[in-house]
Length: 310
Ligand code: BTN
Image 1 (cartoon, rainbow, N blue to C red):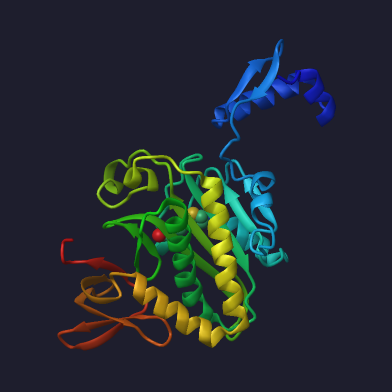
Image 2 (image 1 turned 120 degrees about the horizontal axis):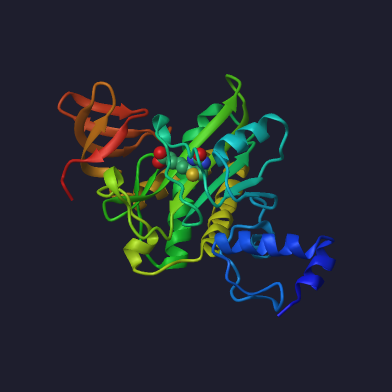
């Protein structure tokens, strides 16, 4: 037990402020024993994505060497895009316990309940053309794949361009946003949402969404997963900057290898107008090719859905 007086002295605050902070931490799920008369004891290291907890796990990793953490925020992507506009350095990670206006692809929202998922946006400044956005999205998916496999032993699937699945259900979505000139990127934000410890999903999400906990029957450390994700992304991004052409080709190969959707899969493409066909791998820019009755078509932005019912 540490007395409230001592904590207050060390933090340069009052005992009543310490009590208020303890109450707030408890509401966030941090297990603290005691009360003002007895002092306090931290029972377990909280699974909060705080820089103080993540930094020691990220030695030598550039992405995430600067972390902005929020207990609650509208959207980490919106925050990272704003920070990009005012000169925030490359590699800063924006992590939230909860998002109240989480952004998904194509104007959808992203459900972001407190401390159950990972809501992470990383600011990048690749000295390249806007054509990097798609490879960066695919690279982020591969990094999630690697981190999840390494930490949990589960084997995810990838659905072009940016969904990470377990079985046929999605547990991770990626939203890459960019600010660029016609030929030069100013900054890119890779936004990654991972359902980690959600016990269930209700309503329209129930048939399509899952979490690592639902698939494995146990909870996982968001801290450990986030550290593994940032390491994996850092590694891939360094290669991408050093040798863009080779790295891009490697990303496309890795994606095709790890995605059951990339080749030989009967899919429906939900764009205007929608169409069906069998996937034929990625083209040299990373777009998905689909063999249809009227020839091979390239999917530029539509949603891909399996039609084989599996
Ligand atoms: C999708 O529609 O599949 C993409 C979802 C992306 C969600 C993540 S959560 C962290 C980051 N901040 C946001 O507002 N969105 C992304």
